[in-house]
Image (cartoon, rainbow, N blue to C red; front, side):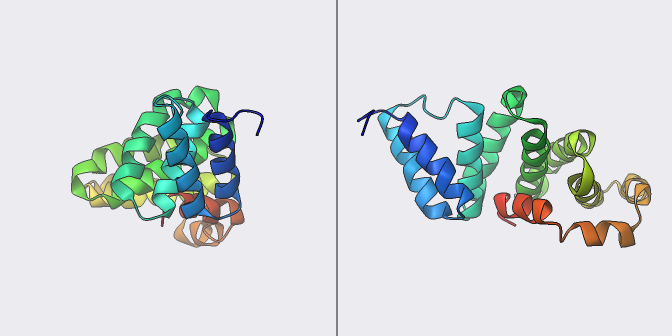
Length: 170
């Protein structure tokens, strides 16, 4: 009500709806923000919300494009958001098929470097999978050996990892 016709309230609404698990509604709010101002999604946090909303609603190609756009702007995000965004981006791009596998490997390498705790372990598993899909089986095995499979699997059930996988649309 205070900023009628402005995009920023729609961005905030979209981000809040996304946190509440209402991805379709979040996407609608973000679309409205973009309609109001072409540059509404230039902010890293808004662009990350756009990527996540697209991924969660099954719009993989749009999500991959948004993640690719947000990664160079990640310095504006918190460390936890940066690692989650790199992880999500890698998973989304890997799901696009063989044409983006090299990008996915790079994104997941970044996630492994930035992440801590369960996200670090999940990044190792996802990176090993991406390397395997890229035909780099020896390196995949070496990455996986960093943490054994039995150590990786329990971390995949961690709430933070599940949230990142949901954000990636997986």
